[in-house]
Structures are given as C-alpha cells and as structure tokens.
Amino acid sequence: MSIMELQDVRQVFRRGGKEVHAVNGVSLTVGKGETVAVIGESGSGKSTLGRVALGLIKPTSGDVVFDGIALGSLSKKEMRALRSRIQVVFQEPYESLNPRIKVGDIVAEPLIIHRPEMSRAQRRAAVIAMLERVGLTAEHAERLPRNLSGGQQQRIGIARAIITEPELVVLDEPTSSLDVSVRARVLDLLRDLQREREISYVFISHDLATVGLISDRVAVMYLGKVVEQGPTQEVLTNPRHPYTKALLSATLSTVVGQRREHVPLRGEIPNPSKAPTKCVLSGRCPVEIAECSTWPVNLLPVADRHDVACLRADADREPAALGGPR
Amino acid sequence: MLRVTGLTSQFRGRAGVVRAIDDVTFEVPEGEAVGIVGETGSGKSVTIRSVLGLLPSYGKVVSGSAEFEGTDLIRLHRSRLREIRGARIGFVAQNPFGSLNPVLSIEKQFRNVMRAHRRISRSDLRDLALERLESVQVRGPERVLRGYAHELSGGMAQRVVIALAMLHDPSLVIADEPTTALDVTVQRQILDLIDAQVKQGRRSLLLVTHDLGVVAQYCHRVVVMKSGKVVETGLVADVFTNPSHDYTRQLLAAVPPAPWAAVPSLSGPEVHR
Ligand SMILES: Nc1ncnc2c1ncn2[C@@H]1O[C@H](COP(=O)(O)OP(=O)(O)OP(=O)(O)O)[C@@H](O)[C@H]1O
Ligand SMILES: Nc1ncnc2c1ncn2[C@@H]1O[C@H](COP(=O)(O)OP(=O)(O)OP(=O)(O)O)[C@@H](O)[C@H]1O
Ligand SMILES: [Mg+2]
Ligand SMILES: [Mg+2]
Image (cartoon, each protein chain N blue to C red):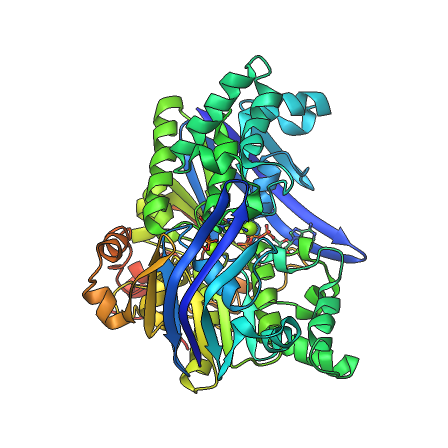
C-alpha cells in the first residue's frame, strides 16, 4: 500500500524572463511504513521535490497523491485538514523556528492546531515527553531558539514534526548538525515511531552512511531527475549510474591515511535554465558514448526494483562489447 | 597563528548564569588545518563566536585569551576586531541563510563585504565575486549574483557564504560545519581547494564538523569537546588511532559503517580523465 505517490512532477521557477527547471519529471512512490531516501547533487531539486510532496508548492505539472487523494484537487480548507497527517522537518533548523516563541510553545503549536481537545496540562506533558525522546530536557522548553546550539535546534524541528503522530514526514537533512552518537539516537527514535505507528518517511540527505542505516529504498537525483533508484543496500553496494558511483567514491574514510580512490566528474555542473535535451550527465560522464547526447535518458530496470537512467548501465558487465574475448 | 588559552564564556539568562565553555585551550599553527569535534551543545560554536567577538549581548567571555598574529582578539576594540574579521580572518557560520540578508541581492552583499574593508570599482568587484563563486563550484554565477538568498538551494547558499568569507583572501578561515549542506562530491572539491591553499602555506583553517571523515582526511590536529570542555587534543593521526579519552573512543565507535567501501571499480570500464 502506498501512502504517497508523485507522478511525473515538474517544477519550473520563473523570475523575470529566466527559468529554473528545478524538477524535471520525477515519479516516486512511498509505501506505508517505508523510508525512502532522496540523495544527490546539491541544487538537484531534492528540497523542491519535498515541498511539492508536502503541498507547499503546486507543481508546474504532474500529480501528488496522498492516501488516494490528489492534492491538486483540494480546497484550502481541505488541505489544512490534511496538514496534520503530513509533517516536515526543514533543512535549515533555525530559519524554520519562530525566533520570538519559546521552544516549548513551538513544539506545542501543532497540538494546539490539530489536537484542540487536549488540555493545557496534557499538552505540556506531551511536549516534555517529546523533548526527552529527542534527548533534550524540560529546561530547554523555556528557551528561545537562538539560545540553543545548532544540533539542539535541529531536534526541536524533529520534535515539532512528530508530536502529532503524522502518517508521512518529509525530513530534509534532519541530522546534519548532530554528532554521531546523538544522530544514532534520533535515528532509533524515528525507527521506533515507524514500527509503532507505520509512519512513512521521505529522508533527504547528503549523509550516505545515515541513508544506509535508515532507508529501505533510495532515489538518486541529478539536475532535477532521478537517475537511479532501488533498494538501499543494492544501490549503495552495487551502484550502476556513473553519478551514483562518483558520489559514493567521494565519501571520506575516517581512517587516517586511507584515501578511497575518488572518481571526479569532469567539468562544470550544468545550469538548470532549460529542460534537459540529453542525458543529464552528458559532458561530465566518464563512460559517455555518442548516443548519450541524442535525447534525455529515462529510468529503465536493471534488476529487481532497481532502475537506472544510463545507456551504459550494463557496460561493465559486457566485456565482449568492450572488445574483450569473444 | 591562533592560540586560544583558558577561554571561558557564559550566558546570562532567566535561570541565572550558564557557563557554556570552560577553560578552552588549543592552537592553530600556521599552515595547518585543525578540526573541532564533539557532542552537540558542547560549546564548539560558542568557542568560535567568543574568539571572533560574536557573542550576543547577554553572553560574555569571562576569562582567557585568543592571540591571532600576536594580538589578543578578546581584548581588542570592537571596531578593530571587525577590521580583522572579514579581512584577515574569514568566517563561515553554521547556518548559511542566517548569514545572508534576504532582502538584498547577492551581488549587493558582496559589495557590502568588500566595502567594509577596501574600495574597488564595481566591475572589478564583479569579476572578483564571479571568480570566488566559480572557485566553490557555483554554476551560473552571474545568475546567482543577480538573485536573492531564498532562490538558492541549501548547498548553494552555503557555497555563497564560503565565497564571501574568501573574498579578501584571509590568512585564517574559521568555519562552523561548512560542508554539511553539500553533496559529497562538491564537499570534496571545496575541501580539496582549501586543502591546497593550506598546503601552499597560504592559509590556516579552523573547522567545526561532525564528520569524522573530514577530520581524518583534511585536518592535522583535532580538538575534542564535551560539556564545554576540551577533553582531548592532538595530532589526528594519534588521536584517531589511539584515543585516550572515553568520549573520543565512543565518538569513533559510533561512526556508521560504509557498506560501499568495498565496491570494486567505481570508475566503470573506460575512464578518460
Ligand atoms: N545564545 C545563547 N544563549 C544561551 N545559551 C546558549 C546560546 N548559544 C548556545 N548556548 C548554549 O551553550 C552550549 C554550547 O552551545 P554551542 O552552540 O557552542 O554548541 P555546539 O557545540 O556548537 O553544538 P552543535 O554541534 O549542536 O552546533 C549549549 O548548551 C547551548 O544550549
Ligand atoms: N523559489 C525559488 N526561485 C527560483 N529558483 C529556485 C527557488 N527554489 C529553488 N530554486 C532553484 O531550484 C533548484 C533546486 O533547488 P533545491 O533547493 O530543490 O535543491 P536541493 O537538491 O535541495 O539542493 P541542496 O542539497 O543544496 O539543498 C536550484 O537551482 C535552486 O536555485
Ligand atoms: Mg535542499
Ligand atoms: Mg554549533
């Protein structure tokens, strides 16, 4: 059963005469109780896709379906009612917290809107319990956001998002400011909630190790398109798209002196001012052939539930085609 | 280059005075990169803000010193400190959007940072800004200069802030989690760029990060903080291979495994480079 379905979503931002093609036809399904990670280049449209999924921006084209309901068909009022079921943790913790409101009230806010039947005392107890679950204390409830460290602010964002027990949470870089041990704790909390209540997560992150721990499936974005998607372990250990390979090879070992061989992509990241007319990696790709620049390359299956948008996805599996022994 | 000694800072609040950092001591030698790691809330950002004179009005350095090129920054007059910050010390704050003004174009913000220290013509400034943006892999820098902060992705905003910090070619760069918002390929390019400058002896770097891989690969020394105190400091090669403090051991043990570390030949069959 899927809780969220994005169907061929496109998002074009316009300003003056200029266009930015931020998302170029992305389809993505999130199952009930599933965690789908979105990774990829910075500026590739991950946050934009997240905002579309939340109904915060209406896509230029394409549909967003939540629990069988097309968001595009909803009135403002119906959309507001749906809000308690879909929550978000924004990429910038501080920017997304009202600087003039005490942390305790920030976390309580969704309860006031979506659980009006709760008494003040019940709300307070729920807030403290939530703060403790993310590793903070009642004392933090009395502070203003700016009097917290970056990682503490980030956990306030998470507490606020999950306190109403939503069905889907979009988490945009939710653990980037946390040290590894607090991060592990927050990931445990997210997993516990998922087990208890079948919550689904869209987990946007640059941290591949965290993605490896938390997600069931992963979608890799480059220049507004998904270039590879599949079960997380499969994609991380058996990457087939050259961009995914470059991404994985760029991660840094924590062992001093152990440098992984890094495959840098050639040249510059292209400008998203036009919709792509060829493979998005064309011009930067280490295994490019002439056909790659004739038209956009779409996702095709390479294995069970594993799709790759690359004409050379099988190249390293066909030694014959490369002039090897016949 | 930078010598921090016995630095202690506190905040005044409703609950009374809270000591955020206590007796913090470490050194950034010339031409070296030093990483600060530690628990969230352990005082990494407060340490940096204390050194740079950027604590809020209800915060205060109560003792200690921070000597930069022979001058104690803590005792320096605010206006002199502002001259040094930005010109000789570049600062990249933890929250990139917080250091950009939402109502000014990016170009205007480059102009303001430039004006604070030096007068140059508009077209020279433009060229310099474009060059700095290109050096941190910003695509379409002209478009970025004309635009506003809210049009940038998190990673692009971060790169704009790094480019602003580099504008005056500072001899010391202090950066609070500069690369967490970036994908690892871009992170690597930017770190390689700074690393090359450090290796040429042109720059020193003080870097706060939660990414122990960044410390292992790019830093000479590491400072480990917990609850406002430095619990361990030394050469990365020593501390990471032979940690002496329990917390450091815990931190290193908590690093999740990289399942792809053993992926054979990531480069594919034909690599032209
Ligand atoms: N403006 C402030 N007012 C009051 N307390 C503060 C303020 N800024 C930070 N603190 C407190 O001081 C302590 C140290 O915070 P700091 O921001 O230096 O942590 P950090 O090590 O940078 O953590 P993170 O990794 O989460 O960014 C924390 O307990 C924090 O709550
Ligand atoms: N409101 C807007 N107006 C104009 N362009 C925008 C707007 N929001 C985003 N963009 C552009 O859309 C593209 C995708 O941005 P998005 O924030 O979705 O990237 P991202 O994948 O989340 O990147 P990051 O990893 O750096 O956060 C970028 O080129 C960005 O500059
Ligand atoms: Mg983003
Ligand atoms: Mg900090």
